Each structure stands twice: as structure tokens, then as C-alpha cells.
Length: 291
Image 1: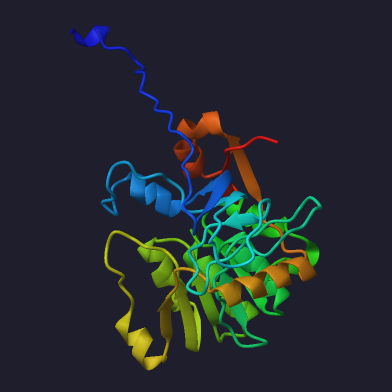
Image 2 (image 1 turned 30 degrees about the vertical axis):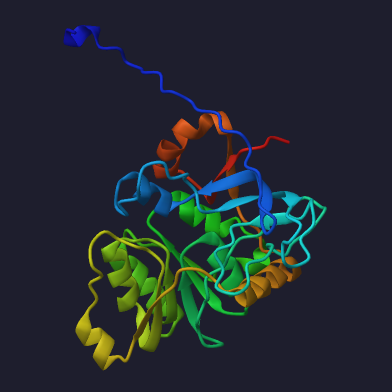
């Protein structure tokens, strides 16, 4: 076929599968929504060498529609369920609210001393840290991210918002806020090596760096800073059931809210481009069931 005759679009096969039949000890959950995050993008790009046939999204949420006769626990049809990747016994999300605005999402542990300042990337992290009484610095290289940090309710807004694409200017602002000491802790949600190295540089003596990103390259940190300033670097994957429950209780009592951008199921082919735009805000969620 001549190049000029190659079509611009192709039609892929779609396979409909029957709804699975559960075994006596199993539950059947109908997925209502599923999140798309950076690890999904990394899987798509082949970083994790995942086998073909994998169903994307590790952040599903839905409703239990069948309970096996021998299923352990107090499961009931109609219970809301979420991703069960918790080290403790896998259970429901914990929120059964009937009013709009209820949202459950796993939170990363934030470590900072009372009275200190913490740099927390991610608008949920900003709110949770502020709700715990910390002075919070929100850092983002994107204007949309910085704007989102300032759109949270007044009581949960950060003390300072800096543009991390201007590191020298951002550093000066942070040092002014902390009287030259630096940050007690920084939680970095991006896998950018320069961003994590910069966050480490912003820590005070004895500071803590929480690493949430998973880059294809090995991490590289300033060994002199780690040793002479006695810094701690710790990775985090998921929260425990107990930590998640504390997060849910704090969200309900203080009004922490997640900014969610929803797309319909038929718009799935567009979500990768949407996710990678610099104007993207908050969590990108596909609505599997409308209404």
C-alpha cells in the first residue's frame, strides 16, 4: 500500500466478557470509577514490563453486588469498596456518607515536628498537613498545581506557595519563612530526580524526605548533605488500614477535599493526553458507571 493510502485511524477489536461467577469465599464488586495516575502512565510506557492483558488503574472504587456464602467478615451487598492494597486486613474504604462531597483516598504519612514547616507536594497532602497544624509550603513547577494549592478552603491553605521551576527564588522564600533553618520535612510526589534533589537541599538539620515517585533511573542524593546534616530519606508505597482510617476521620472533621477531574468511559483514549497537559489539576478519574 502506498504511503498516501495509509488510513489515519484504525478500528480495534472489542471483546465482551461475561460477568464472573464468584466462589463461596469471594465478593463481586461492580466498579463505578477508577483513577489514572503516574504509575499507570509508567506501565503504559513499559517501565514495569507488565504482561499484556493487564487491566489498567490500581485505584478502583465501586459497590459490592454479591457476597459469597463463606466470605469472612460483615460484608453486605451495597457496601462501598475501594482498592484493597492495604497491609492490614483488607476492608472497605470506611466512608459511607450519603451527602455529596464524600471522597475516600489513601494518604501518605507526613512526618514533621510540631511548629516546623513541611513541603508537601499534592493538594491533598497540603490539606492534611495543614489540618495537622503544620506550616506548609506547597511547591510545584506548574501554574495549575500552584493555583490548586491556593483554591483549598482558607483554614487548609499553605503558608507559602513557591514555583519550583525557579529554584533559587523558591529557596530564598523558604529560608525567609523558616528563619534560615530550612524545612522539617518534604514529601515529594514526583519521580523527577532534580525535584527530589532540590527538596533534599531545602531540609534543615535532621530533616526528613518522603519519596513517593518511582523513576526509571536510580535515585541520586547528595551524600554530604545526608551525612553531615543527618537527613532521613524514606520511601512510601501505601498507607496501612489504621493510617487510612485516621486520614478519613481527619478529612471528615476538617473538610479536606479532593479535586477530581472526571471523564466518561468512552473518553478513555483521551486520558493519557489529558494527564500529561500542564493544565491538569488534581485526580483524573474515569466514570465506569454514569449517574
